Image (tube, rainbow, N blue to C red):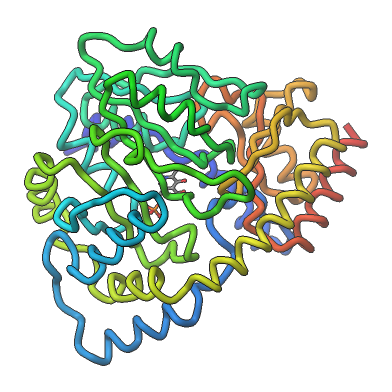
Length: 381
Ligand SMILES: Cc1ncc(COP(=O)(O)O)c(C=O)c1O
């Protein structure tokens, strides 16, 4: 009898999905759960985007597209980067993908040989090391600290660079910490001379200081971005990558073999997102910010450690070490006893053990109720 491959057996699950699945099981039993573990916008996709998708379907835009993506969308992405960051990108450097996740996989597969190393912050988005391991490359972790707002320290990155280091991956605003990497640190990271893979999927969701693209500081970089978060389009599976010219053809061949092209209707919807959804984004952003400020205050009042205010995305990673439990058990205990879903820090790396991630991609009303329940739980333990 055939067995699943070692590669497939060894790829770790998303622990947050375990929490979510348990939450759904409790909901089926009639319990009312408040979801603060989820990493996707609670808003529906803006109407102008859905309308554009309907029009595309009606017009018969239902076929495979060019493997790099429709030119109109790639031109619009190029304009978006020029307007927002003042950088010039040829549309020929852009590959439209079925979400940021396939984009990340394609970059890793075009860049990493077996045994190569890639530097990743700890904590980090769980897929980063999983993808590297899947390709028989080695993640090398560099610690980030809560007192620094979990920002990478360029001098600590330097210590991790070795003969097999191929790249560093950065993610600002970050999942799970919600923090922004400062302009100065981005500049210093670019100066290290490493190839930088910059996951910019949370760009646009910043609530104060402006975010920067790595392309403002170096051309030796890949950018990953997508429509899931900013435009509330997780289910449309649409993203893109920006690549140095010499990697475009290899990545295009991976795309052709694995994915053929991103979905045609989603691509036309993405074009409407970039060109028509500005007011919708502003509306959602204002609401996220209101929730963010409430959540920061409330979690601090409840005794969780959060020395630096998270300024982007829709997450915060708070220190719960004073409760003396491991984060996995704590998250499940909060779910079982308080009916609130939260993500255990351990999902995001060893250095996030003892922390919990809260998402404010839920209504203010639900956030208030969830944190009231958490307060009662904390009083009872
Ligand atoms: C940092 C980060 N990168 C990439 C992704 C994947 O996004 P997509 O829906 O575009 O595949 C996520 C989703 O949560 C994320 O948090």
